[in-house]
Structure formats: C-alpha cells, structure tokens
Image 1 (cartoon, rainbow, N blue to C red):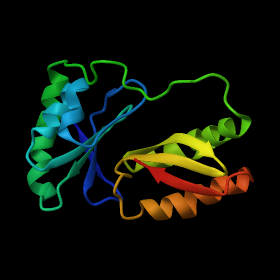
Image 2 (image 1 turned 180 degrees about the horizontal axis):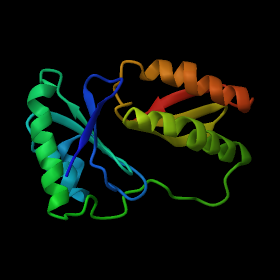
Image 3 (image 1 turned 90 degrees about the horizontal axis):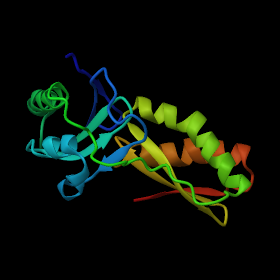
Image 4 (image 1 turned 30 degrees about the vertical axis):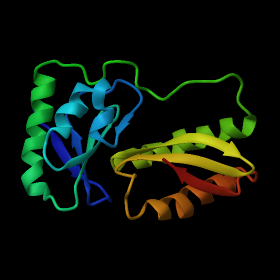
Length: 182
C-alpha cells in the first residue's frame, strides 16, 4: 500500500491520501481524543503522541499535530497507523458519521448558499485537506464550520472573509457576512 502525503496551507496539518476510499461519503472531524469512539482509525491516530486532531474525508485523512512536534518524527508513525488500519480491513467509522441531514423544506436562499458551497468552495478547500460545512443563515449572516486543515489555519480568516464571503455576496445579495462557528 502506498500512501501519499501533501502539505496544506496550515503548517500544523498534513494530508494523507491512502489511494482508497476513506469515509465513502461525508466527513468526520475529531478535535480531541474523547470524541473518537465512533472511529477506530481516529482513535489509533490519537494514540500517536503529538496528534491533536484528525479529519476524515471521502478519500483523504488530515492530521493536526501539536506545535512542539516535528513532522519528520510524526509522519512515519502516522503512515504506519493508516497503513496497518487499512491492511487489517478495519472500518473507518462505526456509524453513519456524515453530516448530511435534511430538516424539511429549505429556504431558497439556503439552497443557493449550499449549492455555491458544494460546487465552488468545498472542492477547493478539500484540495488543502479540509472542509467547510453550512450551519445556518440568519439575518444576512451565513454560519460555517471549518474542519480539517482549515480549522486553526493562519489563512482561514482571509479565506472566509475575502474568498467565501465575497463569493456569496456576489451571487446572493441577501448575504451580508460570513462567520465561522465551532
């Protein structure tokens, strides 16, 4: 098994591409060890000393390290955990961890916002090892959750304000601001 690695704009995260399906669909973001009960892979990665976050996506895994750790030391251990997990045929997620659920009929503006996020924003952000999910629209403000390498990235505020906010405001005049939520 060959696992590629890619640097992300966030120096504390590294993207691992195992060359196979990871979650099937959807994403799962683990920002601390306590939340890993539904993912044997995330649990194994948190066992590596220095790992502080794990983000699982359709075809990649993004790992966040502690500031005082070096990728040269962590990368081999992380590669070993990922390789051993997939070679053993263990499940990545124990239940449906995808965040895609619908609650009745959505407002036309919300549908437009989600469509722009899905077609223009999320593919670009996924290339950098992250994801952005929609959390709400209220009084002109779009609430988004930044995951993976985007969470804590030094350029995430610029991406949110200069990129995503400008895009949404251009296509949807009702949008006045974009805010990150956790």
